[in-house]
Image (cartoon, rainbow, N blue to C red; front, side, top):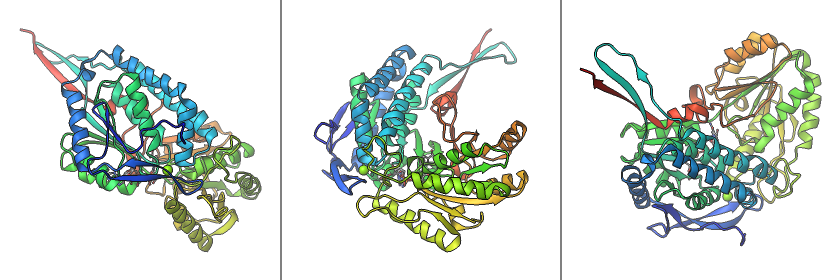
Length: 482
Ligand code: NAP
Ligand code: MG
């Protein structure tokens, strides 16, 4: 840990590191061992007030929103470069704090974050309005202006990447932002803050507050000078944030939970579909909002698919996340592991256990990749988001059946469709109420492609052009011509 240069126990705002005013700290834990890593500051309302004041000053008086898009782009690009230059350290920090395998933090989280800053650097000088032909002797045009002070409230499953998805477009559009990482995984956001200072963002533009959701998060949501909240996390907390934002009519975007259907038709490439099913549910320990947690299988191929699926699941045993060969690490915390094991017990009473079903070892929070067969869509394990390595296999007879079951959930984040019939693939993709549909693949993302939910999976689209819309207001300007 000694070589990991984070600023433990402190908060970043106004371009400087500060102790929490109350002097409070809390520990971040390594989920592979259950041991504490370091202490971080526990921000309270006073700290939120100070950070918001700094972010507001940077927005109203500072250079950032007035700076040319070219100059903002340079800062964003430099931050992307710094992430890449510090890739190994940032990846190790993320693995230590979250339990995500080092092969993923090294090959996915950090490089995708660097790419995301560079992609939005490209947008910074391409944000503009339109001229609109109107009646009468007027020139009418629109301007796209930054919203103001934004708060990004971040979950623990992709700590660096989720902070980046919010920061990069918000900064490109000229906003200032306060990032609040999840209490389980605060370290990579602190590192990102440190790199942002190095990249030359003016003071108050990038701020990082560690602290509890109930206190620090809620104070950000309620603060009258925070103009927008961008949240990724549970549907339950999303609901609270929406209610609390109503008081000050903040702009809100919510990326929430899911219970995504991954549909395998009988005419699919079976090996590809099984690989997709395994990645769909076991990638990132199933701690993935898009987890393909309901595998909908056409009845006629059920037995053949199950054989391959169970064999594949057995090979995805969790292990030391620092071993470069490990593909599945521990769950993020003891509390979360207990929740997942509780769902596994419910599954054992509702359906047939086909693979896994137990904790692995007694040190760290490792859970076996688990598959339940004979699941009906009304069972608890098919309805509630488990957010762990637990797959529910449900059979169907016709495409209509598949679409009906797929849509029968309060969520609508993502879906997968596996078939060789191109017409069927597009028809089913069009009918599923979900923000993302993958055909013959699963869990692919790109910073250019919009991502977000239907129904109770939230609203607003991150990434791509859509993210710029999320972080700008449209102003209509009228000029008399006579
Ligand atoms: P969570 O409890 O909703 O927490 C997410 C963030 O919100 C954390 O930073 C948390 O802080 C903060 N928070 C908690 N209560 C708050 C409150 N009352 N006011 C303001 N902020 C508050 O979710 P989680 O357990 O970290 O993450 C798992 C969930 O996130 C899953 O349900 C998953 O589906 C969802 N998720 C969705 C997406 C997506 O893109 N749609 C992506 C990832 C995860 P503390 O950590 O201090 O409590
Ligand atoms: Mg931790």
